[in-house]
Image (cartoon, rainbow, N blue to C red; front, side, top):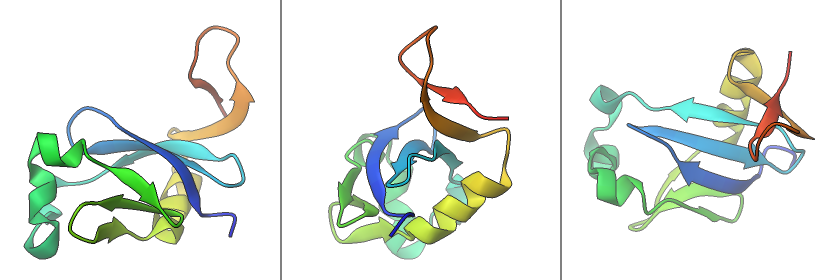
Length: 98
């Protein structure tokens, strides 16, 4: 699907940079107060940094994952965080879309 995650990188705090199969990318910010129950391990910065992509989903050890379709919608609805797949001539990060 177009919302399958193909790349993920941990950012500062509880944030992730994600890129989807269709080239859309952006930053997802998780609220630490919402990381309870099965998501509680994500509060540990070292554990949070062990993020990887598994079958199109953002995942962590212990079968913890996030719904890629919800992340895609969040990035699409937040134009300040939406990033196009076009390369940025000024640096290595993709260019921000308008």
